[in-house]
Every structure is written in structure tokens, then in C-alpha cells.
Image (cartoon, rainbow over all chains, first blue to last red; front, side, top):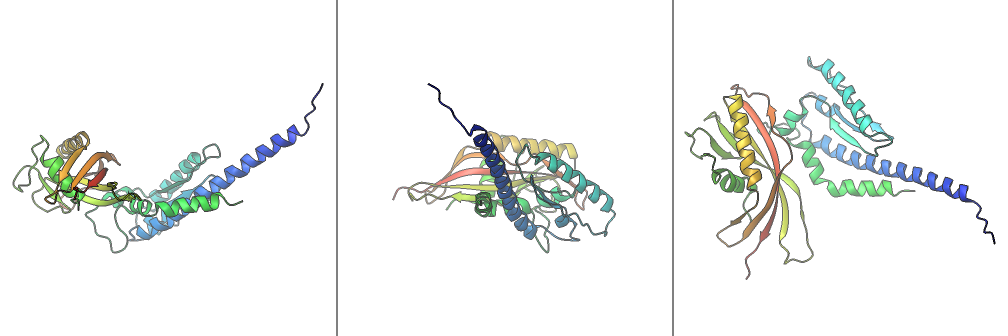
Length: 152
Length: 148
């Protein structure tokens, strides 16, 4: 007795396509979550010349928001531009097709000092801007990931 | 109501530790909450920095779980002395993060753990050319009300 199974190739091909689609949806969901965090972090980021805000980048596996249009108001412009390019490059490696990730960060070399210095008062924004944006918007970020990630 | 996190850290961890910290401003190192006075030059400050949203339970008898965060800031005249003091602070906090605080009304706040969220970070020297290093933590605590 022989059982003949047909269509195995079609099934395998369908599974592969489905896997690809799922990865793309998941990556899109992660990026959407990153966008929510980015918008909230921007609202809290202190602003003097706007360069700290401009250094905020968001890199996903298939999409990115690079920013990086720095104001030429200080001697730091060459360093800011160079650091920004370096950060984007590192983020792209981290969020490669193999590693489904979204990377968000500030490339300005002084961002850590502004973030951690609680003794400074800022006319706009506040210290711990990224940490607070994350803590206060956890459920909104999760919702954004689920909403776009589950869209067909 | 539980105490502010900065107060509990100052009183229970830094002052209770074997390290000779003091509230006295004439001492070698003094500890302050939510402020960094100009004098003395060698100071430790503890700032509350918010934290993660608390865990909510449908069962109201379950103690509420909170995740308050705080930052310790050490400022001083000598770079290595500042680094050493931060290490002492770090040891005092990390090794004794499990403790109980009871207020007058009998409410117990049980600190289960205190976890660092950064390593010590050097900030640029201030206008008086003093060295500053900061480190952030978050705590895991439960507030247990007394039985009626």
C-alpha cells in the first residue's frame, strides 16, 4: 500500500512566507513602540539649542528615524555629527535582520550628564527624561507594539 | 503611608551602616535629602527620582508593591575620595537592601531588594571645581498595613 502526499513543497513555502510576514509584523510593532517612547522622551528632553533633541535616533530592523540636523551654534558640531553617524551604525548592527530589535538613544556625548544631573533646573524638560518617559508610558508602548504587531 | 524612599535610604542604609556617615555639616561627609548645599564641600545627597508604576492587585488585602527609584550623588574635593565614598555607599545599599521600616501608626514597609540601574557616572566638575559622581537604584518594597 502506498500513501502519496502531494503539496509538501507548497506547505513549506507557505510556512516560510508566513514566518517572513510574522517577523515583519513583529519588527513593525517594535518600531511603533519605539516611536511612542521617542515622542514622550522628546517632550521631556531639556532644550537649549535643540541639539540634544536632534541627537535622538530610533533604529528598527526595517525602518529608522535618524534625525541629526544639528544647529551650528557651538564648537561641538563636528563631534556631534561624527558621534551621531557612529551611533546609527552601531544601532543598525544591533537591529540587523538576524536580531529583531529596535534601538533608541541619544548620540550627543553630553546626554548622559544632562540625564543624570538632578541638581540642574531646565526651563523646558527635565533630568531623567528617557527613564521617566519609559516608566510613565510602559502600557502605551506595549499597546502600540501589540496593535501594529498584530495587524495583518 | 510609607516614608519617602530618599528618607529610608538615608536613615536605614547610610546612617545605620558601619561607615562613618553623619548628618552633621561639620563632619567629613554629610548626608542630605533632595538638596546639595554649597557647604560643606564633601557631601552625599539622595534624590527620589520617581520609579516604575506600582503593581495593582484585585485582592485589596494583598500588600501593594512599589518600585521607587532614587539617585545617590557624591560630591567632594578629591577625585579618588569621591570614588571611594561612592563605593562605600554602594556597598551599604547593595548589601543591606532587605530591611523593614515601621512608622508610628504601625504600618510596615518591607524593602525586599535594592537594585542598581547604573554604574557610578562622573559628571563634569561643578562651578567650584568639585568632583561629582552619581549612581541610580530602584527598590522593591511592599507596604503592609497593621491588622485592624
